[in-house]
Length: 131
Length: 421
Image (cartoon, rainbow over all chains, first blue to last red; front, side):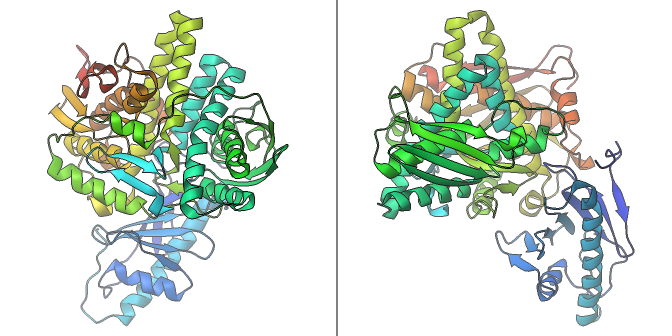
């Protein structure tokens, strides 16, 4: 059994990102991801999608305002370009006590991908992460 | 799957194949089933839930089999399994002939979500998948060309009782009573002229966006739909309506003093739905992408909830009046409850759209008592604080109901005297 969720919520800090527990039907599934230092040359969070696809994620297109990619292990990442919100949805196959760690791993990967995408994009473009 | 889903766009009712259908989450589904069992006892409650599942699954399965050209028993059983999973009810494998058979289920919506929600704190002694049993029995009837209401099914193992999977035994049973059908034709006769309410310019585009988003959604590899922080089912409206109204009728006969308690619980199912499903949608990234971040003002929550109700197939819920902190009046030309009641039972003696009543009260509560900007988690503790932490600040009345023959259904939510809104 994992430790109870503190009343103030649950935040995990990583080198490139932090994740904060969000509303979900079953414990510790949904995590809000905030990328740490914005890589200065990434034009849009939408640029993350092809970069993640190159790493084995698959893209799901349902509505144009929500970008979704599936991790090969069944986790999902939802990105809202207009507001910069990123939500990581950990697969329910992961035991509850490990879900936060998995969310942070994915967030760190997003951080790496964002840095790589920024490096590959034209200079002077801005990050649109809503902060 | 998505081609089977149709809306009556001006009334915001939904059909799946030939069957009236709605979306509901596991919180609502488990709460309503428990309410029925609490009212009638487990034996009678689970029997009613089985009968309702069987009754309303049969026309769906027959209609879709005909439409898709599935004629052999094997094709029809396979189709039934696909439909069940596509609707988010889990995986079920059926094997049956006229003498009976069995069904094996995994990740069944009711049992699995019960075990996830309560399994660590409650020991369950009875199986949870009476709807699944009814669906399996109907699948056998339709596949084998048997008389309707002739196959019985009994769940012998259930994940909610900590079994590794769910198992059903099917065998020919006592013929059930055939009740008047409630399908598209019958519902069509009960629909009143539609109308708009306030803020339609906001509500209608959101409704469309939600429908577009949900159109391709179907069960995952488990046969479950996990979305908006809940497990969602595309479900048969007749199932919900029959178990609710027959439970009320049975309690009226056997323990009339308890009818009020049951009606309150049926209203509370509306609280459960709005808190979990509507709240989960409002907090989701998908909502943020389609509508924008939540402002914390009550009106956008009320507008959003009208759109969510429409997209889920509950009916054309409109805002007739809204005075923040004081009063909300919702009107509809019909609801999934009222069209069923009129079709099956005729005019109701009093307004009885219990779900609509409870949902409207809960919308008022969510609009005024939830700090949306703080991005709350919709936990059971939060639900208890909002809806069970003493007298509610709102009262709900339904002066008009299309179930009674009125031309509109109207629910009025007003702040209780002296209550903080």
